[in-house]
View 1: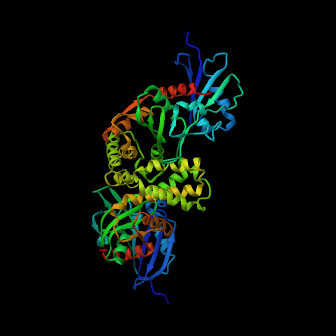
View 2 (view 1 turned 90 degrees about the vertical axis):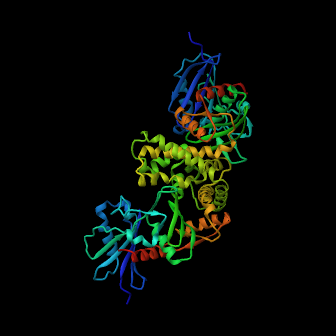
View 3 (view 1 turned 120 degrees about the horizontal axis):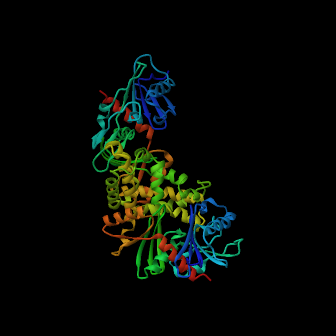
Length: 305
Length: 305
């Protein structure tokens, strides 16, 4: 017979929610997913959405801790969990948790704070701090940059469980906007995963790495290449992706040391970042994002008052 | 009695068309405008759209030269006028003109070519080359960069009437996309021309000038500033505009000499660029865009075979 659920960890993002039932041993006993992300819910719909996700798992009779990270704690979420301010010790993340009202009193719900930064470039994160705590818990020796590719990529400098500084690059959102809404869409109008995508990606990454200050000008190369050299949509898509990722990595290049940069994100995206890191004379290593968010929720739970 | 129209110059862009009736003396005798830009017309609708614009002016009885620059000569326009290839002499622009069929045989229509660039970054322009020729005709002594701010800003290096090199920065389009379609729209949701716009503009321009390679990361500052410092939409709009223009100017800074950079574009936009050029330790001077396109059409007409 399977282990009983001892507590539940939840990663509640903008567009969806993932929940894991964890046993006393720390093993994942059950899991649930839902498309009820923060952006789809008004404040009073959060308890029901959480209840529906929890109901997918075999719950014990007694009371149950539920520890949530991510956008549920944003101002427009369920209940605002005020930011910790970087530089800050993530080991104390749970001390900043807030307790929203939950009609079903079996569930003792805590929402973890995000992290903000006021000095050295205003910035905010919600959810990534828990993954960073998890990474630090699993790899206690690591000091250096961590890269979290995505719609809004995060680059954070960790020293053990301490977050020193971080930035956000709008790389993924920019790719989507340029691909679908800008003049470049005319050059990306067709199959994008064809054989020339790779050649385009390498050319774009090289241009971005070589001259990141020229991004606004290099983007239009996509259009010119399709008009002048008949570059196909797959080449253009590869170029645009490579150019943006190359520019993003170049902007962080000086802070990257000799250790491989931990990469937390989708496998596909992380593989692209790994490749461009290599072109930049650096290296990356894949980190399982589910593993680190679970480790982070677990570590945070230990410090909840 | 007014001078008679001797020939007609037309600037036919993506979204509209402007036509001027020119007398033998070179004076503008009449003018017309239309919203029948290239993007709204199928190939066979161009003759009628041109006829309608010409009909707004008092035309002479005899045959009439009509010289057109701009997107009417694009592949998706009326008749493709193949690009000249930079570096190239703009004095010979008229030699590349094409002659589309015009049902009304009174009008002898010529469409001027655009300019492309294959070496040193693929690029294309259509319309700006005629303004550049006009600028060179009016200021024969000028050698250096010319900046043409807009949806797709052009930066061209002129040596007299020769265009050496040019680039295109998607600055204006990026501003519009980020303002209306990206996550930053939440921070720009309100009156944008308020009293804090100016302070935001200066802050953004400074950040763009200081670290143009960090654009993808600096953009998110807009969101963070509204979340953490309650920056108002007008500040955020100013910051975004300043950041993009500062980044664009920084990318061209090394090619800007001690002469003021000629600025061709809308008065409002040129004033912003002038200001950021000044912040960058350079200077700009406003050029009347109608004056230069007319001078360019006139100079090009002289070389039409």
